Length: 143
Image (cartoon, rainbow, N blue to C red; front, top):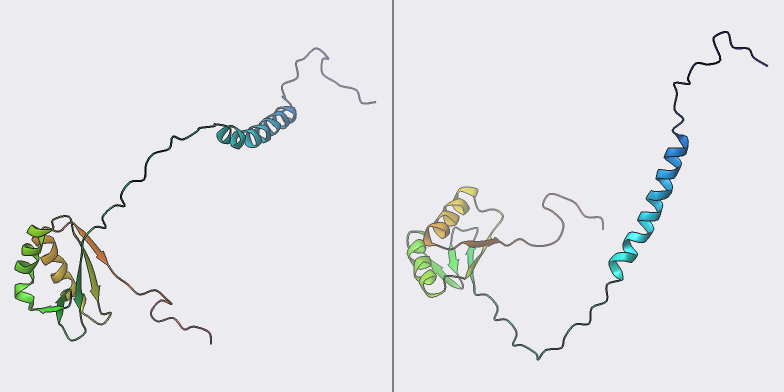
């Protein structure tokens, strides 16, 4: 038996946190198990309605840039200097249309930027850049 040299009436200054950690871990597990059950317990009976007409798909304009430098709006070839006026005319007919820009990967970035600027100046707000799916350029696939 070990003897203490200091007075036996001094207060112990250390707190044992192990029981506190054990209780907190048990509470954490209880909340983790019960939280998903509370979210799924809400029972709602949805009302039935008559079928509605399907939404009309939004209009899109295909704008393509070929490797030879040609600009095509839909299937018709357009000169670069008349692109903006043609897009403005289309914008007045369908202002909520979206532009789908398809550019060959070998087209210089400057030409794509000029076409995108013309699209923006013509008033169109929605522009999507179309890409092909598959392996990324420059990667080799195992055969």
